[in-house]
Length: 214
Image (cartoon, rainbow, N blue to C red; front, side, top):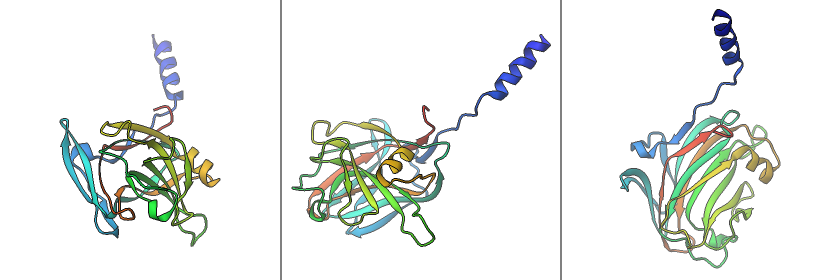
């Protein structure tokens, strides 16, 4: 019995420790501590609301653009996979989302990483619910080459439904920017309609980082 117990202890000690999920947006608990508005044009309204018995973050834009941003140092080495869910009433209708006049989306989730070099600007990926671009499409943001856009949802077929997404951030930064990223300096959600002067409403569930395969 003693030998078996010792063997079991050795085997357990050899198992890799699992990284617990890191909740960045704990909206289901009504918690927005650390999250702040960042204004660009007008003000998108963000508030906690009830949805099907669960609290979520609601965003409403009437021709406005402001993000809800969490500035925080986040290590990606153990938890590189971002998970979130969102719902839009309808994607915005714009002629071309790849130009400045069309850079509006009913729902976005941003991840921001430090730039390379002492004075380099940060780089970011913006995951969007596109009105027309196919799922999987990516393109440079029309305002800055430091942001890459990725369509993870498209069109009206799933509007009004809660949709869940899972992205390996280290793999996406490697593919889109050609560099290794092992930490973030912030995450954000954004519902904006300032360029097209439309109205948009979206709801966001909790935002969580997990280990690969977690």
